[in-house]
Structures are given as C-alpha cells and as structure tokens.
Image (cartoon, rainbow, N blue to C red; front, top):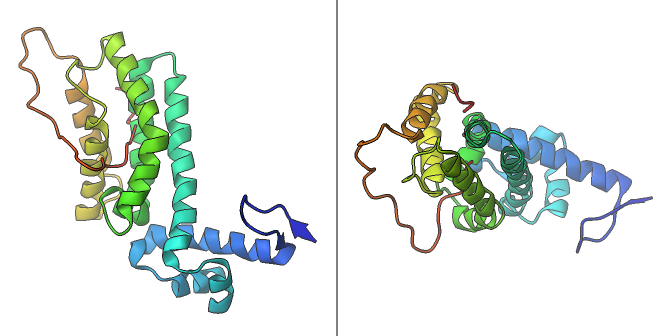
Amino acid sequence: MAEPAEPGRPPLRRDAERNRRRLLAAAREVFRDRGLTATLDDVARRAGLGVGTAYRHFANKEELADAVFEDMIDRVEQFAREAAADPDPWHGLASSLEKVCELQAHDRGLREVMLGTGKATQRHTLVLRRIKPLVDLLVDRAREQGTLRADVTPVDLPMIQLMVAAITDRTGEPDLWRRYLRLLLDGMRTPPPGSPPLPPGAVFRGHEPAGCPGETAP
C-alpha cells in the first residue's frame, strides 16, 4: 500500500511514510531543545529509528531542517492571516506578533533561524515571500486606524522579533520576553501631538530578517 506523496516525491509505502513522520516530529523536538547544532543522528535516536532509516528519507540535516521550518512558516502565515481578518487592526497586529514571539521563545531552532544562524538567508527569503505582504497589510491597517504611530514601518516588526528572540537566548528565561514586548508595543502606539519622530530605521541590502507579525493589546 502506498500513501499519497508530496509533489515531486515518489509514493512511499505506508511504513516508510510513518517513519518519515516520526522523523519530522522528532526533529521538531530536537531542534526546539538543542537548536541547529543537533545532528541527523540525534533526530534518529529521538525518533527511535536507525540512522540508516533517517538518511533514506533525508540526505542531510539541512534537508530535514528545511522540511521542519516550512511547517513553522505555515504557522506564522496562519497567524498573519488571522490578524488581517481581525476587525480591530491594532489587536490583530499586536496579537499576531505575540503569537510568533511566543513560538520562537520556546523553540531554540526557530530563534536561531530568526537571528541568522546557519542557512538563515534562504529561509528568510522564503518567509519574506510568503509573510511580508501580510505584514505590510497589518501595518497599513493599524496606521489607517490611527493606533499605530505613522512613522512605524513594516521592517520595524522583524527587528522587534529579533530583539525579543535575543532576550530568551541571553537570559534563558522563556517568558521574560512578554515584559519587553509590552514595552515595545506601547512605544509603537500613536504618540501625543508634538512628540518627536523616531530616529531613522534600518536599511537592508540583499535580504531582510524574517518578518514577524505581535502581544495582545493592553
């Protein structure tokens, strides 16, 4: 018996497809706990499978990591789409950023991708292609609502994501980011008339950090 295969992949027997799913599930756990320094052998052991089985499904660790992080990008895209459908633009923007930052706070491998470790450039490109148009929409909606300060730009959101990821990485406290995200969100709100504008923002050449749409508004 064969299970339906992914486009471009030959059909897998039922037991082979089961093993592949076990490897992907184990990889999520291993990369979450140990980051991208973990090996394909580590993943095979966590899955309870032989190393040969792992290499029959994935040529190397990077190929396995690509499969895992595509799934993560699916989740980030879902958060952004839900935010874009929120009737309250500020709440949509803030809550989607919170969800993504919470995801990365508990996942060391995802933090390393967001902070530029390993094969980050290619994965950033994939995130930008799928997520950036949604992030642009979230920012535009909140600015039009009047709740987001006019000089905030879409690229400010991934920069906030990088800062929040660094908090967890530096302190090892997985929930401390919530305090600083709230401070950052408060700073993104429309200021009183006469407030000075923000200093110039980042300018990226070549590629931008992975976009992250925010914490539930106070």
